[in-house]
Image 1 (tube, rainbow, N blue to C red):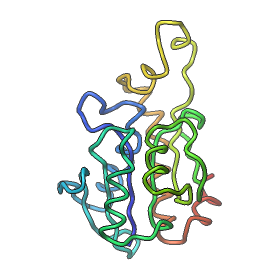
Image 2: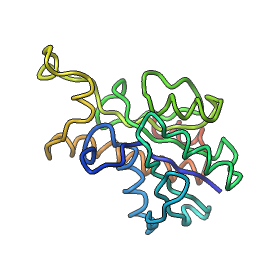
Image 3: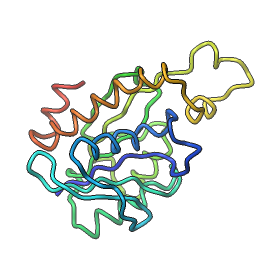
Length: 190
């Protein structure tokens, strides 16, 4: 069994923002594999189904980003899912918009959701997909706009379409991860 957890913020005001790329990937994955994410348990919205012949749980923690790890840890424990079968997806400013970066393990960097996951799992040894959102460009470089504004600001259609390329790649990479393992996904999509 696999747990595929996308990080985001649960309220409508955060939908269609850079910070909700994890939710967007899980939503697209759910659509592709016809998995309803309608059940609520352990501070998360989730659904279960089959991807590439394997049973999976798709999870969107419903805490705020900086507490995401609590829901993931509870699902892991309850369903006895080994850490190597837990894939966490989140946005990353250090990855170019429209690109993804897959890692077997590693530190959380500056991402508060990833920090929470590392803290709750007491480990950095879980696979993750970082979906690129790019760094703020000149329009965001003035003193009145912060990194927070960049990651949680609503996106226009053109900007979102650029980010959707990363979402699409992440969905493909998740299928590859489940079918052939993390090394294969890294070789194919990094």
